[in-house]
Amino acid sequence: MYTKDIIHTSDAIANLFQLIDVDRFPHALLLKGATGSGKLILARALAQYLICSNKSNGESCGSCQHCHKSLKSIHPDIHFSFPITGAKVTCNDFMNDFREFIIEYPYSSGSDWITHMGEGKKTGNITAAECNRLSHIVHLKPYESDKKIVIIWLPEFLGKEGNRLLKMIEEPPSETYFIFVSDQADMILGTILSRCQIVNIAPIPTQIMADLLAEKYTLQADDALTIANLSEGNINEAFTISEHGENKFLPIWMNLFRSAYQGHPASIVKSVNDINELTKEEMKTFFRYCTHFLRQCLLLRYLPSKHVVLPQHEVELAQKVIAVVDDEAIQKVTTMLDEISYHLDRNANMKISLLNFAIKTNKALKKNAVMA
Ligand SMILES: [Zn+2]
Image (cartoon, rainbow, N blue to C red; front, side, top):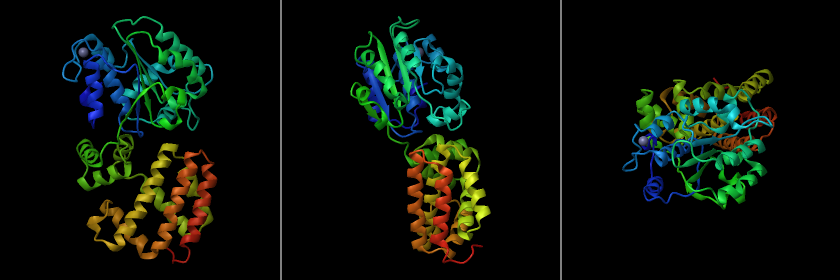
């Protein structure tokens, strides 16, 4: 990965490359920040820069043997560790698949990876066997370069097993570097956190993301801006929505809203089942989309439509909604969306939570007439 592949750089990021130049790169670094902010790309760019034999001005050369292998994620001195499912397995059992995955989907979340492994809604973890593998790797000599880099993606999946790694993080063999990449740093073991230099990676700014989406997917500027706003700095999510060509959450949301509004049990159950098919990450985005849509409905009531961040065909639907639903009901449903997102984060039974949401939405809306 090149430095130029990092979509949004910052002083903190530039400083990391400078630390390599002056040979003061930390032996244990934690890159933390929200999903889809490009932290894994940054970690790979740092690893490549560390071992490139002809780097200059914060960029690796791209033509030395280290760069060649690092670009394909097959350098024998750049090791990856990541969440997997199963008890006695190690990341070696999944390595080829993982390498292809991060090249194809460089901004993915942990749940995207677990879904990709075919394990659906199972939770991944970094196993005891994997910690033993890491311990073994760290004590081997580098193969082709003079350095060894271990990128641990999502150390929040380590659990207590992570304590097996403490000693080698604290006193690594010379020229050994750990780069932890975390979406949820508050869930990492305190014993690991306290041994790392921590760098916070900010979400990608909305306008930068919108410009990128407009160019990559040939979108209209306002559509690209809507998607960028909705994605809240998560470029992975923005790509997923853009690839569908249109917002795939809109019909699901309209079905839920309409069925809750009308209070028809069979259509509520069908709508709930459709949403329950989404992955956890998709569901998160879906709830955020619903909240965004309702906020824009409130704006639309009081401001000209040019102030509303929705594509034109969604503005038309929002106008239908505000024609039949008052502000108080919209506020209530928005609060319930916050609650259901909270349940999702805590792994509640989403089918029950969604049914509950639909019934409460029906109560909040039922004073109004049937929606067109
Ligand atoms: Zn190079």
